[in-house]
Length: 215
Image 1 (cartoon, rainbow, N blue to C red):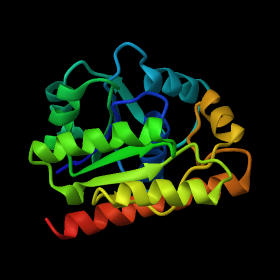
Image 2 (cartoon, rainbow, N blue to C red):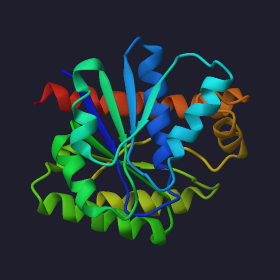
Image 3 (cartoon, one colour):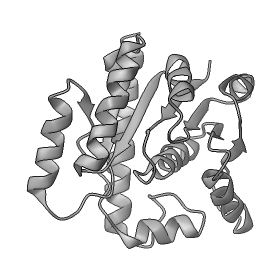
């Protein structure tokens, strides 16, 4: 049975594709057959990223396909150990459909209220549709240098009863440069940024293991 992960947000620019690629790459390194289901047919961000990855013959190879519906992607589940859905922003119905089929829903967000409030609203909607709270995981992305801001954002999310991954992705040019070259956040040219991304990936994997043990 395939593991199904959805990376979802109702707001663009919070790092959905960054997290989708990070998770996919780390599982693929561990010999998982991985498919990224790019659900944003208008931008096709992960599809374009993978073309750059294939151009440079980067390993591990990660399959990426564009889908207009969740059902079409799920039909390929027998062929993969893991499907990572990179959800489209502003697609509430699709996001709810993804969540219902997922083992875990990862919600990336920045630390400003402009990002936190949409994350809170999406979580509230998912919970209202019967998605278990334990399956919703929040990860911070584009975090600046202010520890106080990060702590306030963490408390904001935890006050809503949601699980927050401790490690976070800082705001770094090297992550964008890596993406431009078809690489994931653990494949930058800097050891320190790779380590930060690896900590995020490992924390997500640990949370997945906990969730699956409790199923």
